Image (cartoon, rainbow, N blue to C red; front, side, top):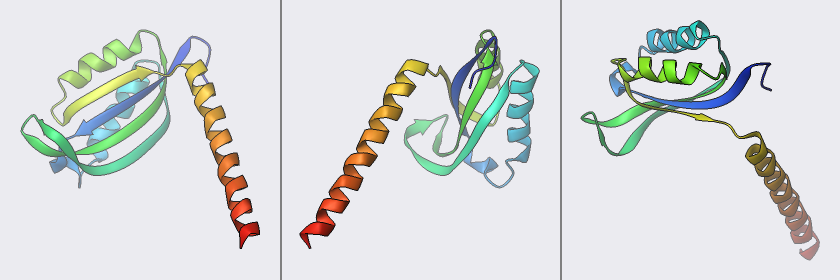
Length: 127
């Protein structure tokens, strides 16, 4: 969870599709940027190359990367300003994770799983 003085954030970065085969340098740049601003990468998910709903910077596809970060309150603005001028990045978004909303979503997910389990057991008994 969040460490003292740090908040949890989620960041999505859309990279130019031409970088798909050589992602090491851009990923290192992101990792260094987060670390230099006093943060940590909690998780990093590669969503791969996907088609965009509309053209962004002349591109119809992008390589999606989702990060969960632990950052000091001043870091998102600094990271945002650097990513705005990074060549390989088409678009990015950093949002703060609301702990209360996350708890409600976890409860809803648990309740949904319980309902699905109950339905599966009920369907078995009907056979």
